[in-house]
Image (cartoon, rainbow, N blue to C red; front, top):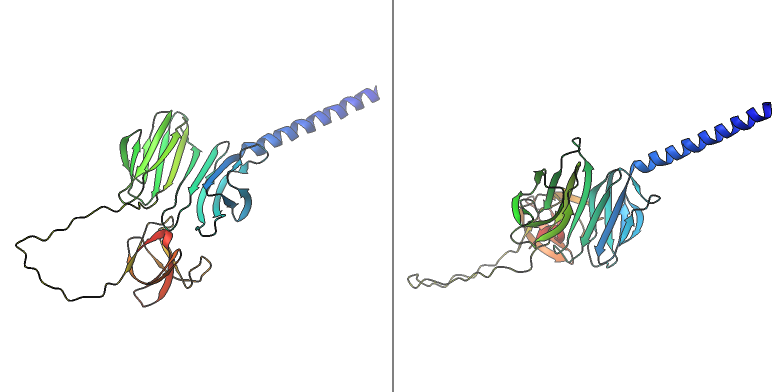
Length: 282
């Protein structure tokens, strides 16, 4: 009798331990989300400075999924002539976050980050669109719904074509699906258009023609929109260079010299430093 009780007790303990182990495993995985990263050309992927692998990359299997939370993603192109990309992303429980980047010279890079986060009201849908530069026109299924940054309440729960465009930049098109009970966030990075408008200028016949005195023209650099709202000025043309100042989007400074991917500018106090041409235009 004692032997039977012992066997029963041992079996019960083993079953309980197995049940608790399964519950623990499920609870851990329930707090994880998936991440997909693509780029052209291929790049190395770092998350919080930890190397994850090379694009195309998908942490989509249960064993590979990431803990929910805020991260800094960094993409380093295998082509060393291209500038790396870095941004904040959110990994949410049981959903997929997608990051895509097309690298180009100077301000010709473009990309998008798409993520989902649960809403308190499970019957609602929401679309949040952020863009760089800001103030871009947003079209949902070819109908204008506003300008960025934009929060669009209750889009239909279906597939959509999202377009973000702004004068002087290439239009960005993203195919999305807005699921019920979630807020879909799209962060779009627009590339500068290489096609400049043709401006015709003709002198009116009634205007007296004079010969102007030649005046040296000083090239200037205009700061573009940045993810942080400012741009660091560095002592040397490298991301590792010491910070000597900060400038804001829309400001313009005299150009002193330039190197591949960098402009040297003169600040108002006479300080000279380098800014990335990814976020500046000559």
